[in-house]
Amino acid sequence: PRDPRRTPHPAAGSSEGGAGDAAGSGGASSEARGPLAVKLPDVSEVVLAPLVEQLLRAEDWDTLTVKLILRKLEEQLAVGAELPVGWIQPHKQSVKRLVALSMADIRVERKEEEEGQAPRRASRGRGKQ
Image 1 (cartoon, rainbow, N blue to C red):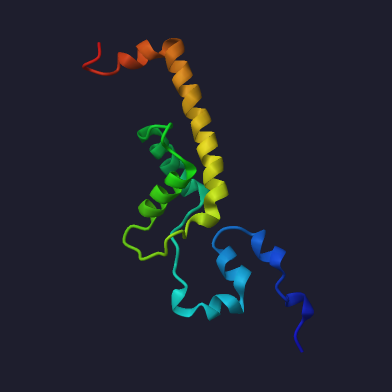
Image 2 (spheres, rainbow, N blue to C red):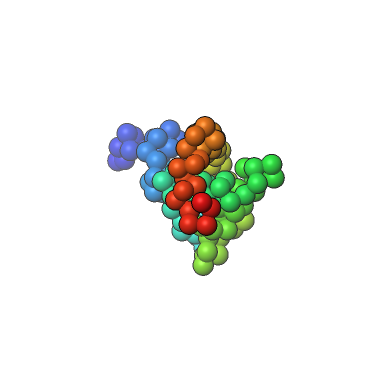
């Protein structure tokens, strides 16, 4: 007889985080996907944070949207892998949070530069003295 305590509960798989989510949330349904199941790249916030910051520093904020950031992240992280379009969508809330945090950090950094640290920074560059 099976132990009823071992029956997977929807909340049990989602609270652990990390790589266990994909295996713990589906059980038989993940096996039913067969060849469609693809190993997704690591998309933890540790991996996403520097990529989001890099995009924010390189792009014009007036034209940059979360949707565009998601698309660019999806392209960067899927290099060399054949992944379905939209595979990064489950991480949209994490990306939105990282965008907000990075934008706040960059704004503070820019404000500090304007308030007196800019001359010190400019003196580091060889051609801007």
